[in-house]
Length: 167
Image 1 (spheres, rainbow, N blue to C red):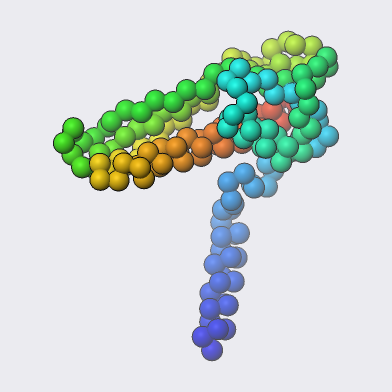
Image 2 (cartoon, rainbow, N blue to C red):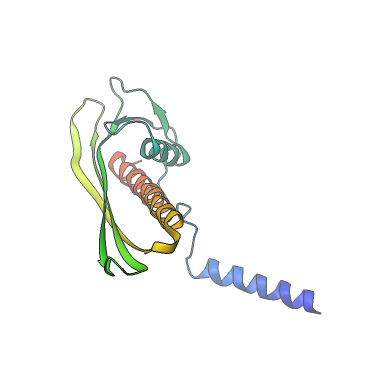
């Protein structure tokens, strides 16, 4: 009896989540489809985490990421920055709230090197708690937030590229 009730509740939860439009980040229906499109990613900020996240998002949407070349549209990552600002709590407070600002500047070039968009800026702000007693955990939280913001930026750039290419 309990097992049947648990199965019923699980099924109802799954149906209600599907019915309300909730989806895992990056898996929404109608998400960018770049199937068969060749793109280059030119990163002026290096080939670290941001470049990797953008490449993963583009490939997940079906794009083939290739080297820059003639006739290849190019997504150029111009600048990435982050800053932290205290928004509550003083020097002696054990817990304070910080604000993380993430900024990405980018542009998109067509296959002839003509700028279609940009330079444009993606900017997002997140708040998080910093606890003096758990410095390592609090610093890890900031790094995790930056990684999440990079993933968000990569997903939004992929969506924007799909809209520009119009396929």
